[in-house]
Length: 289
Image 1: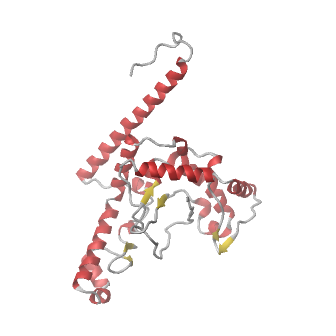
Image 2 (image 1 turned 180 degrees about the horizontal axis):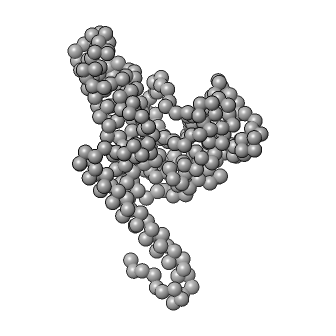
Image 3 (image 1 turned 45 degrees about the horizontal axis):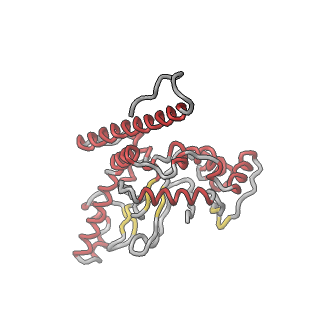
């Protein structure tokens, strides 16, 4: 549309229109920048340029072992495997492979090769999806992109305030280092659930949450890290982890990175979760509804 008239010549109410125009312009600029990012990612992929160590770390990859260790498959044998290529795997897992039929053996190797390929391409693919979402997605509840106390459960707020003051009353402990406590408010859970359904209906691409869950969403790809997840980690979760000895001993007092995702369970899709160990100093699980 046309730019706003010069200041001083507008009738009553035009200031609001000017602000609306500025918000529209800011959104257009953000989408233009995102399209530029998308183009750069696509070019790097075509040229075969590997992501930098800093870029990999942004996606939670701080070790080359990510690409070869703990590759999960469900069929024909469910489990986690080390996979450095067919030859090395056939040598290491010879007894297992000899116990399988030819078809099952080939299926297992093909599944592992596919998972290894997915991991090698995960960083540029995630960056491309994130840029496209930023350029094309219109949020249903844009206020979710900024953390505020009304998104947090009042009991959680009180608990963290105690931790900051050095007067923490420990939450109920289910087992050593495993605590039960509310984190998010009912309002936040409802709005986030609605937002995720809205995003799912957008038709935009979504990344696989992890190697075990196929259905859900990576919240960083929706752009939720900077305003919501990063301050949640630094201002709220880190002080709490530092005040709980089992979590502090595991490195919780210095956690500086997160991988936040949601998973969905439905009949015929993901119905269960196999035994695994999270690669993290602390894990937070929240039932949204």
